[in-house]
Length: 312
Image 1: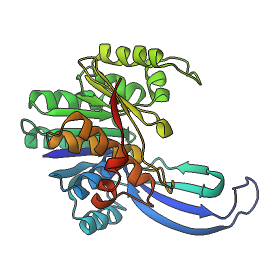
Image 2 (image 1 turned 180 degrees about the vertical axis):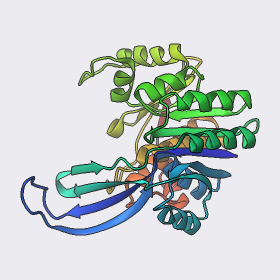
Image 3 (image 1 turned 90 degrees about the horizontal axis):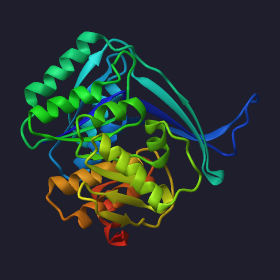
């Protein structure tokens, strides 16, 4: 079983503007739509679309849970969330695609009750089995300790399961002591996590040093996301793979990184060779970026052959 954990889900209210947004004046927009999200939920949907044995779990607000539950039912995604009093946060994302302008207003949502967190961790401990894969990803809601991914990682390790983590700053730094099998940062997230100044241009040798720092702290394998430049995969054995990109029109970048992570986890869950696993990762991320929401299996597979993977 693959478990995707979301401890700060969101409802993304997408507003498509006809022209760039100006502050301090009345703006008009053409269309809008809502999607349910949270990095773990996004990864869960992609894995489910790929027919993996996956369950989305975590914590969400009780007062607006129906939008999530209806979507889970619609896409046949197995789920078991713990419900906290209050609302799950709502994020407003105002987009002008022509100019690539995107303005975000992100909500805070509920304050998590200690009993809800305790019940969630007990659920994980009671249900996790050897060789399961746990994806712990994204931010955490108010009231949740910043060492939560370390706590989850300890449970995962005690059950001889596999931890995959996609986070930043102290959330990631705490998780690293649990020696996650995979992390998926970008350069900005690495620098903020390590307390380093972000540089505009960074060489491959500098990238390798940053990755080594993360591995020294506990990361096993690192998938370095580089946006339009593709990605680099650094193995715990010291090998490096350059991963290319697929061609297409960017529609919505939300969920692309989560889809990339899901594609990778799908590959390892199916015992694919690392090259094929990295193709699935890149194709899943690209296919979602070319969609209004999250990619289908057919859309992902259609891009596989476009993805180059070369050992550096």
